[in-house]
Image (cartoon, rainbow, N blue to C red):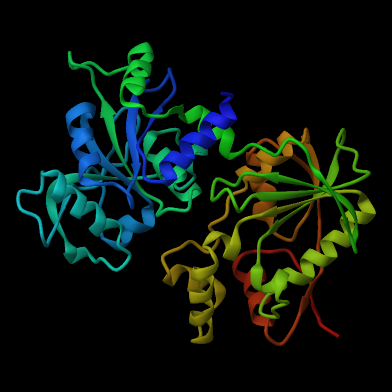
Length: 399
């Protein structure tokens, strides 16, 4: 079985609630962890971890979950070798006895991942150890914590997982051939973080021909790490010259503007204008899955409601617990590199996009401005982007 099929098989096993083994890099901890989706884990699987894994049972979660439940880091100064982000340990406040039994730990896991749970629903300290995943995922930190969150998100589950290190009978970490034997004995899929990262951020082997009303392009799909059904997209002009500097537009997904023609933003108009320019210049459009400047569609709707109550787009994000712009451009740079592109002329009004590509190893020869047209519904939004987010733009009125 080739690597891609082996990964797909492991992910399907994980999606159905099965346990897998994930190893990290030889130069890192060089260990294997048992891993199960937090929303699927059972009492029997927790007992298996305690009996056969023998390591610490932990719950990788997103930062937003830790903030919602007020789970502070165990130490303000993290001097551990790999900066694992342990929070204070917890037990569920209701239904548990000692907190250490498999049943009690299952109840604690279920309490933490329940979006209706509050700080008071957890006792501190306890017997379960939440871990906060790095916000940049495996591209930022190649640990089991990030792998659990990314794998769970990718298969469409709650972005959290339960992990436990595997120790041998003599108390040493199980590695190499011993780990492979353990996987065979218990019939568990064995994959590595390196393989997962390559799978998450790989591209489909063959593009498809895509004639549009703006020009003729080839469409590539690149895994976003969010879900197998939500890839980043690259539209490459049929006559693009990838050997030298090329005109590129990074466009963040905007369902309301791109599909429904919302006049609350300028996204739909920018997309149309960008495609016209890219057809003329034989360039590339990267359509990035960064809805709502990276906060997602549901949170964007919440931000809209706050804007209707008087907030601007920046303060709305902050009130929801996000930064004004949650995007990073490492994925975009990775896609460009996969396409063999090292230098670009970037079609943008946002200096953070220029800076982000440069920091990720892409040379930006120049910035090409993209005209923004205001409607009565979007003028304040565009003015906020210009004044508070430092976008370099000339605002024109819609005719």
